[in-house]
Length: 113
Image 1 (cartoon, rainbow, N blue to C red):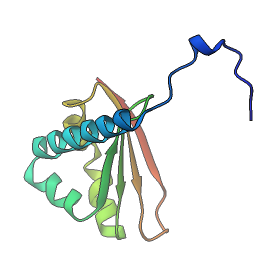
Image 2 (tube, rainbow, N blue to C red):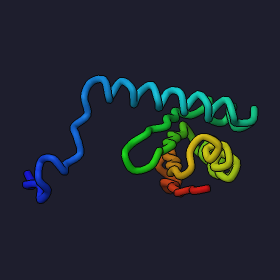
Image 3 (tube, rainbow, N blue to C red):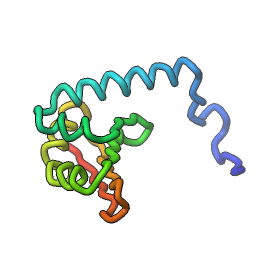
Image 4 (cartoon, one colour):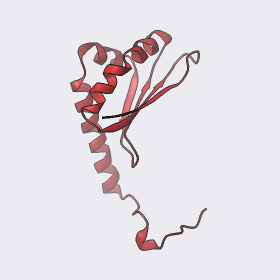
């Protein structure tokens, strides 16, 4: 384990149970706002996948795990629209699209408005 170079007062505080609960509520609220702001076609594509919007200390990450090659193709060709909808709820973020068939490449893009 690395020894911190900063004095204890200058280190970031550790997350408490309340912090984690509030972070989960924030992720849920932002996820709902993002999904509600998407058009019907994008919502249909997202509904076919497992997706989550994770808020961390760096930037929010939208992770989309596609079940098959066809859904992966629909999501990656719709990434511009997904980016626009995501920028409505975050100023910067990252989108990660994970193929389910292991034949396509892992797709990642960072966006900022």
